[in-house]
Image (tube, rainbow, N blue to C red; front, side, top):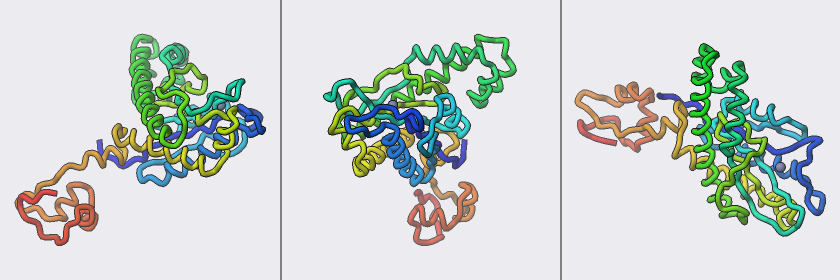
Amino acid sequence: MRGNADIVVAIDAGHGGEDPGSIGPTKKYEKHVTLSVSKKLAAQIDAIPGMKAVLTRRGDYFVNLNKRSEIARKNGAHLLVSVHADAFRTPQPRGASVFVLNTRRANTEIARWVENHEQQSELLGGAGEVLAKNTNDRNVSQTLLDLQFSHSQKEGYKVATKILREMGKVAHLHKKEPVNASLAVLKSPDIPSVLVETGFISNPAEERLLTTRSHQDKLARALAKAIVQYFEANPPEGTLFANRGQQRKHTVKRGESLSVIAQKYGSSVSAIKSANNLKSTSLAVGQTW
Ligand SMILES: [Zn+2]
């Protein structure tokens, strides 16, 4: 499929409003850390051609978990990244971790959604329409949902691995592998999702780091880098990223002019000239670029 759609990354700043999240030893709130890092990450993502960020909240207010995944889904998110900060009852634990949806949780969600036909049609795009017409066939519904969910889980795991690698360069890691979680926030098994714990706000040194602008910048850049790497390797169909990957070499055939070639690729003569560093418009048969 050709197309130049944006890859949509939903960024979910954990907690907010009446829900402060965890509170550090000097009374710094997790909800503020998550919003700052999320906004920085969104800015990074928006600066990349072919990518667009959607924030599930933009200020200090409460958004429930269902609403968060609904925002991601309504915006056609290809990935949901939930940003948090960890806490423990003792000050020692430190470091970042990345959580992915575990199978048991996914299965619970599948079961719940198979009960709810209306929601299914929203869930699966094209497949949802098939489901809507076959609402009495639970096996079909179940199978399609299973397929989609196991795909999302696999993709979530890939993203998580890349995030850990990049975050490990700028922060201490608490867990070096993605952690399987049944956290309620990861309740969109139809969208590949990861939950990033950026560090322990209950650890005095990390509380300071997590509220420092330069460290938040580093975290956001590491997250953006990992997300771009993931989508470069796994571009969704119909997006600019996928299209870029499909750009093949072109060999000039007899009688072909630049304008003919430009038309064939849905491009322009000047775009092709500059993209391929062509100095003149005269072409030699067999010339490849
Ligand atoms: Zn949290």
